[in-house]
Length: 124
Picture (cartoon, rainbow, N blue to C red):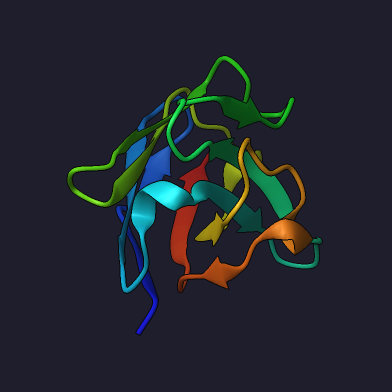
């Protein structure tokens, strides 16, 4: 079975950091771009960041550029999202997802598989 397991969420004060992890199984991990999508209450899903399958090409939403860093370890079937200088506006459920594309993905609708979410709450 295809599985994407997100972890690492939590409660942090503004200015703090968290690192999210997404561990995959059930498919050929290094054939897929992996991304993070978030959804805040009452808002649409937003593609936050994505990393391509093999070349390490990356995408970041303007709202997180300079604060978030995505990376992947294909040997461990895991993608990480390092989130620094967190803001209350970053509060959301964060999902990881996979897309079989050559480059990276910007829009949530482009992903093939989704994992369950992990809650990130940033207090002011």
